Amino acid sequence: MYLAICGNIGSGKTSLAEKLGHHYGWDVLYEAVEGNPYLADFYEDMPKWAFHLQVYFLNSRFQQIKTIQESSKSTIQDRTIYEDAYIFALNLYRSGMLNERDYATYLTLFESMIQHVQPPDLLIYLKSDISKLVSQIQKRGREYENLIQIEYLKNLNAHYTDWIGDYKEGKLLVIDVNDLDFVHNPEDFSLIVERIDAEIHGLFS
Image (cartoon, rainbow, N blue to C red; front, side, top):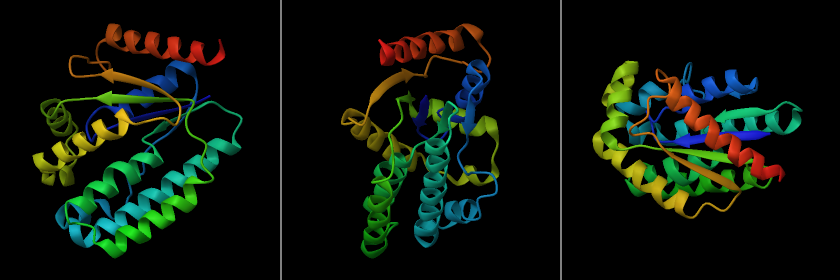
C-alpha cells in the first residue's frame, strides 16, 4: 500500500504522515526539509534559488519513489512528485521567479522521471484556508518560513485547487482540515482514519 499526503505549506502533512505511520505501522518518507541546502536561501531570494531548490526537491522525491517501488512495505509519503511540478515549479514560473529556460529544463527532467513513477494507491489532500496555514506555520517556528508571503500561499492554494480538480492518477481523498486538530484531538484523528480505512477497503472490494 502506497499512500501520499499532499497540501500547502503548513497544512499538516508531516504531522499526519507521522501519526498515520504510527497508527498503521507503516514506513513514512518525509519531505527533504531538514538539511535542505537551498531552502533558507530560497526564501531570502526566490528568483536566484528557485531552480536549484526545485531540482533538489524533484530528485529527492524521485529517490523516495524508487525506494517505495522497490520495497515490499506499505509506505506513506509526505508530499508527492506531482506537487513539485504542477504546484511549486508552475507557481514560480507564473510568478516570474523561474525563467523560461530553467522551467523548460525542469519540465524535461520531470517528464523523464514521471515515466518511471507509479502513482499512490490513495492520495490524501489536506485542504486548508490561508489563515489556518499561517497559524500552523507560526506555531512550528521555522525561522526561514517567517519570510513566506501571504500572496505566495494564496497562489499555491489556487494551484492546488486546479490540480486536485483535475487529478486522475488514482484514488483521491480530500480532507478539509480547517476545523480539525488531529494532532491534539483524538476524535479528529479517528475521523480521518475512518475515512482513509473506507477508501483503502474500496481498493480491495
